[in-house]
Image: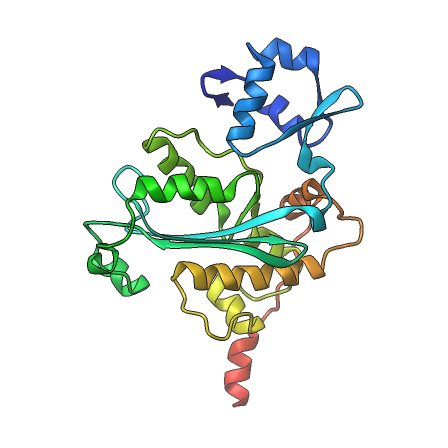
Length: 265
């Protein structure tokens, strides 16, 4: 993994979430350990020292004491090279309660009609919205070192991080959690798309699918339900992240229960 042109191996970086790294190992891989730790902090991760080893603070942070930032973006296309964020929303959650919100459209001079049809957002809607650079700086401040949560986190996290780099900011390093992965291990469902889960579990009755804050609120309700179904041994943030990636997925129903309901009606 290359972080701001300073090298540390993927294997070593991942050990910060599990076994920890000694100062000697860090010195072997980093030119200036103190500087790098401060740089990583600016990118969203805190490194702490415990029993002579260095770890992500999330290794020991209880789930109820952690701040999770549930995020959703709408974009005018899927390719970061030529597309941009047109709406972003996020909420901060601590001990299952919402403690802060962030929501804005983003100025954009080109939105494909197909995107407008999906999201309901057109160019005129964004003409008085703040510019992308300001939105990203504001969002970076809002996110801080929270755990980044999204439904299909790879897309939202990756697009935002790449957008940061396009305006001269460092890429994201916040710990990330995918609500799809977590749901697959805590809720038995025929499908795991957000709209399906909302219909199946009645998470957000007033949902407007493909609008950022609405999808954030649906994901929040899903996230809480997943937390309530965790095994008791999952206690820290890193336990949660590891569980969401490696625990066995729950068995899916053989038939779609929503279709069965329609037949009964």
